[in-house]
Every structure is written in structure tokens, then in C-alpha cells.
Length: 259
Image 1 (cartoon, rainbow, N blue to C red):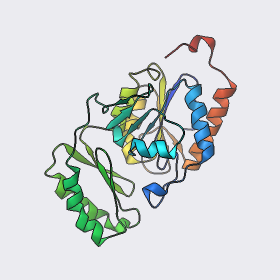
Image 2 (cartoon, one colour; image 1 turned 120 degrees about the horizontal axis):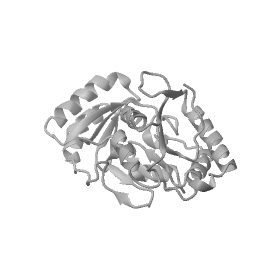
Image 3 (cartoon, rainbow, N blue to C red; image 1 turned 60 degrees about the vertical axis):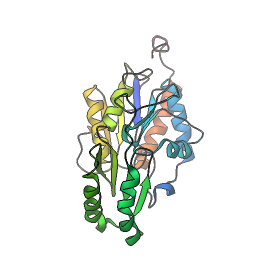
Image 4 (cartoon, rainbow, N blue to C red; image 1 turned 180 degrees about the horizontal axis):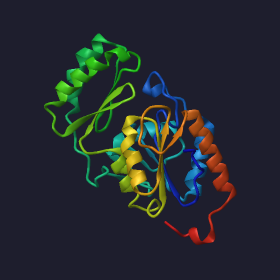
């Protein structure tokens, strides 16, 4: 299925790594296209605020990469929220995220990371990520180490992504984050569209399609999303076309006061 351009009645949800930005060897080495930031600003305004970033990244990462934008977002897979009113919230279930004993996990992983310096251990506010993109042959070893450690932390769960293993608060997901956004203005009542590239985005695809919207998978691989774009470059081109189309055609008068 080809991806049509959004209308003024859509709500747009976007993953970051592998979707808006190309995957880099190190999480902090990602390059953001300045033109894309301009297009995101235009889309956010044209959709009356109904655009959010839904990512495993931290809020600080997103604000730095997308500066000067400060968009609505669900980061760390829904463990932390920022709604369209600019206020920071709890997690996607409406409560404050649990505090995981991350120091214990970091300490348990330290010998592994010291032995294999090509591994990248990325601490977050409510979880952590162990990247093995520079050494994919170490995936099984990383999985074994994290599985053993999390056996003693029942409130945490392990999630697999592209060359990364993530520790997050149990029960949070991108799908639940999108559902929470869709209960709030200016997202409520719109048709949701979510673009993502990884297995961690599958819950988001399921959520938007259950709400009558469309999931869009970036790249190859099996997915429940009903549409596909080939690469982040194609996503950025689509965003540019969408921004141009929506800014050329203002919303109908009947929709200007809608949430």
C-alpha cells in the first residue's frame, strides 16, 4: 500500500532513529537534516499541534537533535510524556514511571562492556540500552547478561530492537503512549498515522490501526503495518511533500476550531 499525504484531520506520530534520522554507529553521532526540522515545524502548525515524536530516546536527546523545536513526545518507550500543552507528564498509563534500580544493572554489565569496548551502554532516566551495532556477533552474550540481571528486577522488562537490547519499565510501550495521546487534545478525534522502523514500533502500528488509522513501516522485514516506506530519506521526502501540501491548503473553516 502506498502512503497518501495526511489531511488536516490526521494526527501524526513519528519514531526518531531509523525513521526521521539514519542509524549511526553511536547514538549521539546521529545527524539531523535542518530541512526536516523546518518541515516538522510546518506540519506541527498545520495539524494544530497534533504531531508527536514516539521514541526510545530521552527527552533531552530529542530536544537537542530537533532544536529549536520542543514537540509533544513520548520518550523511553512511553515511560515519560510531554503533551501538547508543553507540560511533562507521567507514563502512558497515567501514573509516574517506576524507578528501576539501574545502578545494579549498570554494575552487573560493567565487566562485559570493559571486556568488549565496542559495546555501548546508554543510561536513560527510566531504563538503559545496550547497543551492539558495532559488534552484532555479541548479541547472544549481551542477551544472556541482561536476562540474568533482570531476573531479580520484576518491575523491569527486556525489549529487543535493531542491534540493541533495552531495559524499560514493565508495561510501557509505544502503542500505549499513542493511545494516551489520542485521548487528549489536539489529538483526540483525529485519524492517527504512525511511522516507525523497528520491532519496538509494532505496538504503535497495532494501536493506530485499531483506532482506524495507518501504521507505516520503514525499511524491510515483517510487520503488521499496512504501508511501507523504503528508508529515512523517503520518510523525509514524504514529510516535505506533506508540509508543502498542508500549508498550501489551509484547513476548512469548519475544522479550524476543532481540537
